[in-house]
Image (cartoon, rainbow, N blue to C red; front, side, top):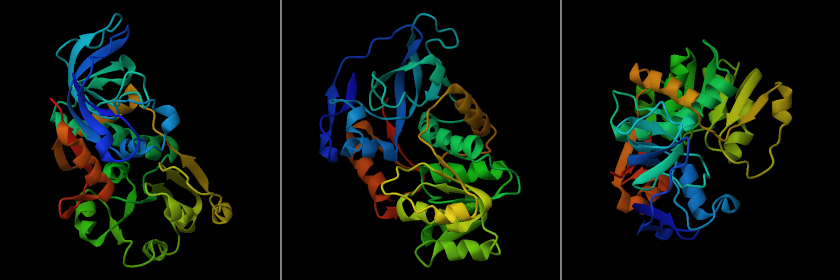
Length: 323
């Protein structure tokens, strides 16, 4: 099969198109013909060498699949050849990721593709959708009429999280650049905060009458995460999906009795089924900002890292057409 193989850590030149064997299918597994995949920040973090202990080289990476079941292993009863499915492969799994014509996956990670989505649309939702669900539903336990601040609302996770928060009945504030304001509002954001025109902390205090927000979803990290407790209401919750590069000063968090959660998403069928239901009821819509063929995976990584699709700001996900 054709696959993109990461041959060394570093730049996009180490993502090489090669012919490699199709992985074996063990009991309880599916062989899926990959129609589409997409790029996540985790992918370029792995490529540049952020997790060398977890990724023996050479490696096939990638964390979103929408495709068609080619073959099933012994003990698989919920799927058959020809079924359209979508899922996130096991992160750091031994049988490789989604940058390939075929992927082998445990059946418990898989569900049937939403019937109203193309493969490209479905592939754009699995990891970011599961991440947004775990952050807002499982960890933050966001409630109706609460206020949430979502950092980076125009990005892959942010664009899904805005829509999910609105389905949960929350008031949604989000940070973005000024040219993205109309876009994030079209997703359901009640307020778009241009973080380049002033201090987002001041903006949030003004928008909430100095009460603060109940939940912060951090997709940025660094100084943004460090200052998050400054916008929290008492007993507020911070959920971050970003590595902590430096120690955090938690004095402000202590002062408002803050609760912190750090999410490294692990997929399962339950989260996918919940996401599928919202997608099929059109309560959440996929957001695709750019599409590339598999042979241009390096350009796709560059687009996501730079946050630009050509001369335009990138919105949502970067999708790869495989099959």
